[in-house]
Image 1 (cartoon, rainbow, N blue to C red):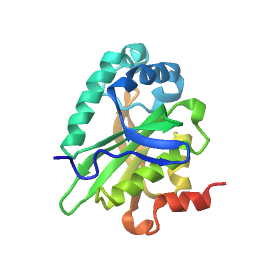
Image 2 (spheres, one colour; image 1 turned 120 degrees about the vertical axis):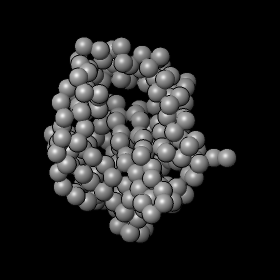
Image 3 (cartoon, one colour; image 1 turned 30 degrees about the horizontal axis):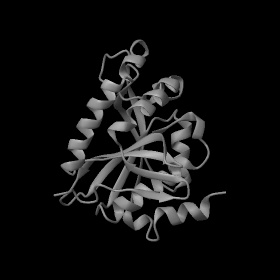
Image 4 (cartoon, one colour; image 1 turned 60 degrees about the vertical axis):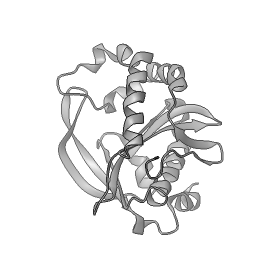
Length: 206
């Protein structure tokens, strides 16, 4: 029996989201290795880990395979939606809805990254809009939260463009790049976007 809202494949124009596949591994590795400077400052890591000395080792196909297996289990259990972001059907990034809680909460967190080559082209806001609308629709969630470091201008720009509500600073929320880092908490509830987030983005997009 599939978890609610999973699996899912969505698209708007050339931008799509779909389940992350094992055969995405080689392209995932290539993108991650090439984008070390772009991605490293925002990578969540266990306390004490020195990512700068192990970036290449952490972007191997073996690491991808282990991650994919774990995310697939979480998806089947209804705890996560691990998705590939694509442009013209080519992998360009990853978006994961995680920490899905049911009962009276019906909420989750979302995180994402994209290849620097497609940054600033509307790919991430489009993908996030598709995913949020799916979460508030078929997946039956009520609230989506994104926690972003104050210094991460590009990621903040995505959620601010889409009208996510800034709910304030969460001090020392996650261990990133060797230290506990403050994050800004952004959120949307289903009531915030009665017409759908993709529809809002279509109106707002220049």
